[in-house]
Length: 190
Length: 213
Image (cartoon, rainbow over all chains, first blue to last red; front, side, top):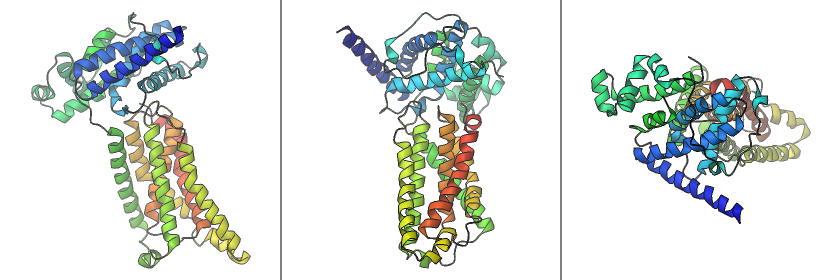
């Protein structure tokens, strides 16, 4: 009985988050923000459980996974279970980290697929070790300015293009590449 | 910056995302790769002068059908392997199916043939360079398909590299059909497959380095 209630719980979560993401992909930014916020708690629980021996890395990896989800959100197919998609991305970033640390043995939980990715959540964010503001400052102008204007100051792509003298497509590409570079810097690569 | 700040940064101005991004990217990459293969081929070889006569033979169309099935199956594999968490349980069977059909036909042809003709049916007159030409013509598609995949999200880089290489090999083989004088099933079933496996093997080896995202 309890088992079924739990299962209903994460199934409902899957449905709810999927609707938020699909609304976001259709252009609803506030639904998208709620989606990322909820997702971050599930990512944190997933990664914290698997990185028990590297607790300091968890929040950095949550941030890196969030950027990955954002940058690759065009690869989500609405016919596919959201938990499988998110989990595959988180696992890819986790394996990437462990490979860099050259220690698959640091993993204390096998990397199998859980059908119930959304059954665990953890909204207590630890401090990330690397400060994104500082990392952002290190980016070259053609990446930094588009992110600051469109993402922090909330200007439209057109306004940002006018302010910087860059073309609108250069602004869009700058944001995308800049977020990618930011993720690489969280990882410690420059 | 706290994670919540990052989240609002990501969501601000995120906007709508075009649908079927994976399909569009792959279609573009395949078109670029096919044109590239054709240009490389025409710089070295000509289109076979008896193409119109060859097009009257059922074996010619069987060969085209085989290569086109390989293009479809490997495209399916590329699309699946570009999406995190997508199911890939049918991928291997879909790729193996056209090859197995070709081998059954090849076996039948060889059994029916007079023993003295079997060697010709298998080796044809161009087996010494056919696979290498296919591998050479696959280079433009290899570059464009790998580029397309890198912009998606392959989470199994070795398999993804194999699929990208196989797709580029199949595109190259399709273009090479315009020149290739061979149409016998035993030839196609072995040397064409070998030619497609060269870029596929290269993709599997290079996948981890080329397809990071």
